[in-house]
Length: 454
Image 1 (cartoon, rainbow, N blue to C red):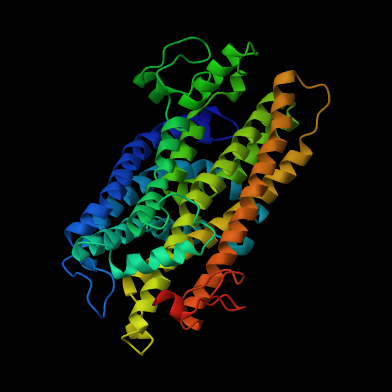
Image 2 (cartoon, rainbow, N blue to C red; image 1 turned 180 degrees about the vertical axis):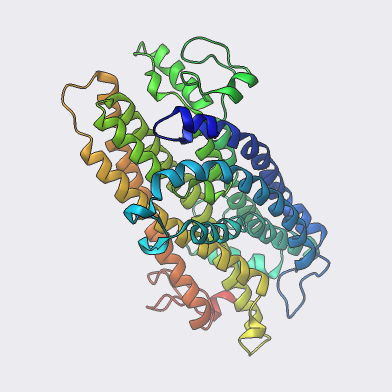
């Protein structure tokens, strides 16, 4: 690393360290997702308590289930720290210059020294992985509840009644509690599938026509290589008799590292990545390397659009909706036998709701800052007489911007809906909320008790 810095006037870049960081990120990402896949089965195995008259959902053993994930979490955090020791070098060289008053920016743009920033981002990345076990253990509660009931549980019957008067009633099998929670949980693994498609080099050849071996990938970026999505794009262009992909559009180690790290909740590796990328893109633009600058911006905008749709909307948004409905349902059943507030709250479900809400709100703030930075950079990158490929990429960015804004609007609607359900869980007599134009629903959206207890 020191030798690289000595031979490059600009210091160490993310281009230089990504290959070594990927050696830590790839295996631990697989390990983390396998752990997430096993959590429902771990929760079922450690769920000795079935539902009772005073407890409508089965309970898993908190310490055993979370203890298993703690081992997985420790391995993931250790590998992330190993990768961070490499990635923090180019970030520090770019953002930290005490003589000029430049430091890392923390919450709301507050300047922070390196140690303080590392402590803050370490706490954030530690918490950000909690949705993986939390979602799986909610599935385990529903699964165990149905097993104990032998037939449709009381909670499942009320779920069916709630869905029959909701906006999702036309979706097949949405009135089946167990099927619905399994389906929403399964959508989370689209992120792992996305990492495989966009963050892992395929078996194809690189741009120069040289076969890609494992040693080649470890040693250097070469002239760029194909991921599975880029290879499919290449095939599409060949079938449609279009120009081949520009070399700058191919993947490098830094692109794969950021894709896999983000989907694996390694926040410390990606927190400053967008700012770093845009600084690099502006430098290419100032050096009149317009092709490279535009393709770097395109990759960043593409990742941001995938994040808001695959990560925030499909996983965190829908899982928050499911968790809140289950929490409100448990409150409704517990209130029938417990008058005190604490006795009418399922602590395990409340934990899942808190984790989901926290992750969703953090994602909203990230998307807001991403959109501001990307839009400003996109507005600045206006150059006449570009070649057809980069000009087409620049035009395509406008479509991605529309897709991003559409996702942001849908995310806002989901959050407003979830806030209404959360308030109703504590303020409505039935603890359930619905749109006020349905029958048996008050003008504030509170569902009547009689419709649920019928």
